[in-house]
Image 1: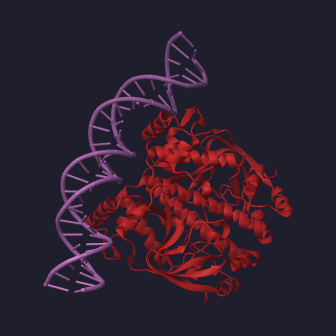
Image 2: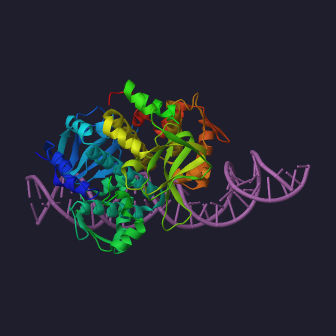
Image 3: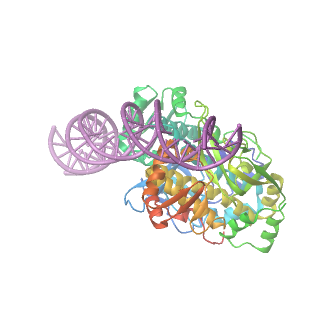
Length: 243
Length: 243
DNA sequence: TATGCGAATTGATGAATGTTAAAACACAGC
DNA sequence: GCTGTGTTTTAACATTCATCAATTCGCATA
């Protein structure tokens, strides 16, 4: 199969792609695989021979705590269009694992093909590189949020970011999106207990900022939510710039 | 000037460099600049035309909070051998700024030269890419620490990491190192108040884990410090692997 | 030696978050 | 319709961390 159009859109939001760049992207051969909730998509440890990008649903990077079996910390969420583990292409092995949040579909790309691209398509290479550096910028923003926001603002920041990322590739609109996460999983992402996540959700509801039924989140007051989250999408690099 | 040997060591710790790779690295032209404590090394916003690497001292990525002037969050620390803002090479502009922690010296490299490398040295390009991806792995580890450790363990984690990174390029040994940071600055890094940092420092001292006089930190009990920090250096990718 | 200033330290109190327990709710299978 | 299971929600209490205030320390310099 060919790569998902989501990833092409991800790049086109950020730079002008030449005809040959697009042709090379579309020529990438991929293998489509579906995953059940909680299934491991990329195992930790060993050096991989392929990387994957999200097609449908979400996935997360999860770290296990050596001395506290059963506990985990989630350090990243991935949505359609994300090239999830390009990291594995340049690292010796991941110190964490990528798991499916809810049911998901993923496309795998062989490293051999990526290596060929790094040898013959310097501009595309810089764009792949860019996508890993944007992931790092997202990590930094999560660090800022963790250090400077209280729980409801912190949760609001996550919701603003997820909606913005989904909308940027056309996977959400009108301030409504599907969030395939339990409160327990939000707790693992934001570093709180599930009980406290529940309090934060209630605060946002009581403030008429969101409506949240089942997996459907509806943002009622974007400006208000962004304000308490101190959300500024600049770090997502959504501007079309020559790179 | 030529690039610092620290950066060559940074790469050689992690991969075998060919003769031509090393020759190309050593041929990179750099401009050495010294900075006073707190001085801005890389401003935020505009697209830069050069990137820098640490030669002496430390620098930090600092984010300002829009609605709280004077406050900042630090999301990364850089030590000798770090290629600090390769990010700026593939991003449209930084959403934060890089400042000097204490006095420091930095070497600037023109982006034109990096671009030439990405066109003719694919292996070196992957290694540069790798260094930005290791920065991302460090961000993730900071997220794990923030989410799962209490203040003294969190501080211990930072000390373990800084020592390991300094020692890996030969800038520290025997569990002693210089930390050019005030407690106020540690507070901005770890997301606590300076008062709370002080209590965390006292806890580590009382536990006979460290001695800390002025800017000199001496780790008295590495195993104990690493245990409460849950520190495992795997994420720093210090193994020599074919990449 | 005396003075001043920024940093480190300590104390007291309040707010945010964690912990434990239990109740309410949703939904699948019987 | 009933039961069982997992998630969400609420409540009561404990711990961690923030805030405000003051004191001590280190060090430069008058």
